[in-house]
Length: 228
Image (cartoon, rainbow, N blue to C red; front, side, top):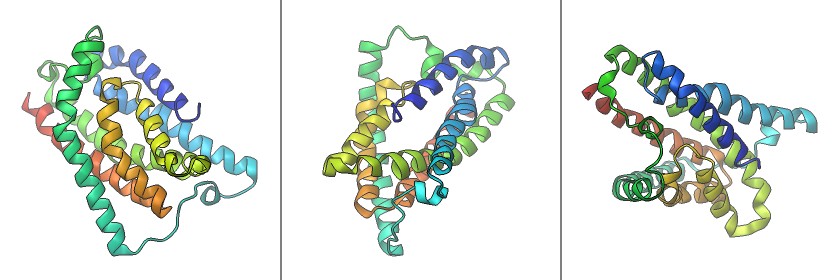
């Protein structure tokens, strides 16, 4: 429940708010970025603070996996995980997304896929959307997700042993109910990131990979938005 509930709430918000933001001249992407600020961060960070208060400890105690990693090893592991995720995104995401969308999710409206015709929006609205997304989807959201999923939830399924990062990765992917067609590719892309976080007991590894990957995705999105 703790893995999947915030994703369900984010998706419900996205579906409900997307038509509203589009009516105000913004792409559906803006609804997803708003969901990060209004749902994701308050729920996940709020839950961590509530656990700290309930247990009478600090947030740093609730968020585990903060063992030190030598700087050189840290950088190498982050680079390997980022490169792996990027290669998977480039090679697997396009064919898998197309297959699953055409086979199972063809009935969803175009705006749900966040790849609508951006030419219908003003350049100002698209730029504002991108800048807002860079902050919340590129930095704030990934940081909070790593604190919640890898700093809190992953250590608490440690009894599963080597299966813990696998289970955590699968549930984290399923949590993205708003992009169900990407589950297989996302699991393959993120499993190394979660595994090194679990292996080294260091949440900052996953945080660095997640932020860099999301920022890279946002940079690739900019010419798509403004090129329209």
